[in-house]
Image (cartoon, rainbow, N blue to C red; front, side, top):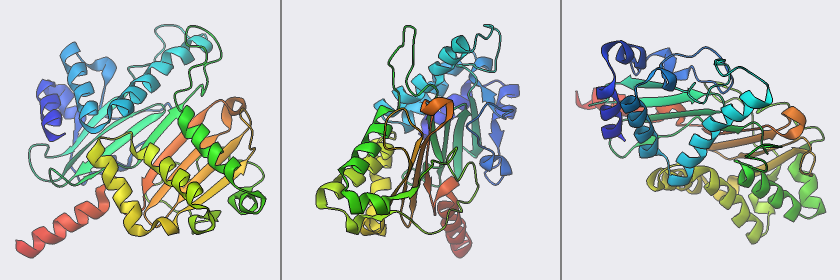
Length: 314
């Protein structure tokens, strides 16, 4: 991943590099979003062909094949939205190239990171070595959740995120489901929004210790599906952290309808992990998902350990 970032940076001219680069301690690291808004960094639409290629290689260096494909398709959905909303071709509000790349720190040595940020896709990576990499916050969204018409009719980019969550809910018996459902109505969005530090309180819903073995396998499988957006070693690290914190401490919570095409929300919450999924907007045809690490978002714990060790030995 570092080599891909160095290669991307080498393709940028001086002006673009100045727009893309920030110190590792800069507050810009926390300035992520998943809605159309003003952003910093270098947008794909501003890049040359070689620069665009290097940007996509950087994405591929961190994402699994399926994760990269999903990310690229989320970008392409902007074209679908532009057509649905009847916008002009020149309108940049819906733009498949309106995704901004930002680099943090010294890419060639020392702590560093990078981010790609745009509508419905915001991925943040932070590293202090070749092996230790934080991959959160990680936001993936889809509007429409199911394309209603046109050449892409029926496309559901985040269908597994929806279907696997509902499958687990419907596999619960009546008493389990009663504990899992925390609200009759789904919240209008993910609760944590773009908080720098997640503040969501204690886990609620159904604890994995109250599930059957098969249900627990489904729960862990759902976590694994979110982690599988990343390269295998990064996905494995997520699962290892969940296991070390205790599968028995994971909670599954649901809000809203149990039916497809009706507003619904779910959450997986453990000592180190929070996953939120929400599908309420546009008549429940608009999905937001986020994965947060309650200790290592933005590489905070990795950076603290790095600087503590540097001070100790320096």
